[in-house]
Length: 201
Length: 201
Image 1: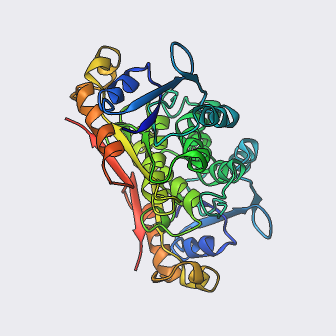
Image 2: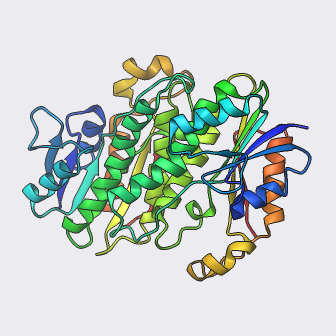
Image 3: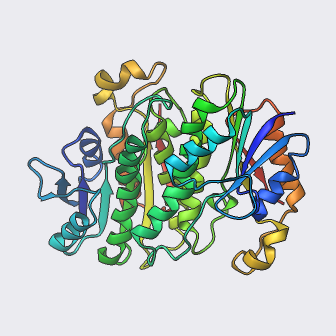
């Protein structure tokens, strides 16, 4: 049994990840609500505080990354930077700071999203930062210390979120949360590293 | 004959691009030196000023994007952000602001670099932002207005820069600037869009 920090535990993607973490001691974290620890991944100090409060842990599973949505010609630099600071720099900081605290042989599992390989309107910032994170994971896996592994889950839309996103994603087939949970499980419990785990129908 | 703004014209990559732009009127730009216009791509106002001063143009070729190099465990958030603001946000801003000014049917050609597909030590920020730009170009090509095209040249190390970078890139084969120039030419003079033009040996 591993100690796993699950960030964004109360969200739909967090709940999906949770379905794959049944064998472990899960410590929940998020920006608000009924979680074990409050954390804001856009804030370095908040990330440090989380790791220090938890103490020993074997895995970090992140399921959050805020993105702004707008057509490219309308999207402001501020909207770009909000997206970059959360979905991209926030996740990089989780690993950068976390590699000092995580146990030998631990693992990080990040989140991207299918829109970098299946683009749709209004999602250019989401797609671009997903491309950044997929690339980051593939490359940084080669230089992490302490036998730490890292992977990223790149899912299509969840069946449980189809009522919200379905209209902007014509021709997409949602996948059940439990299938996405399998990808998180494969990352946490397997020996793979540097992989983008696509979950698509 | 097209009017082409070449950013980073005095650098080695700018000189490589120039070898492919012989059929055109080239307006040179860069941060300093003997160029037609001074521009800092990390500054929105500087980008706007460049486009307004030039007036009519058919193509933008960017060959600059500053990156910090360090091992992942040593790289600070500040180093990450310096890289992101130049190579990633700077290039996105060139397109975001430029699409309002560029001629109907114009083109943007950005620069990434081979390290996102052939990782090496110390280059995680370079690789990650190259992955972001490659993704950005593929996705944004689908929503640019005015029949504007966009591509990115993703070259390996230039033969002309091998004396500087060769030692950190064991097993890489440099390519001549003239071959990289062909990729810029293919982007500016062709009808392709949304493509990552890899130039590798």
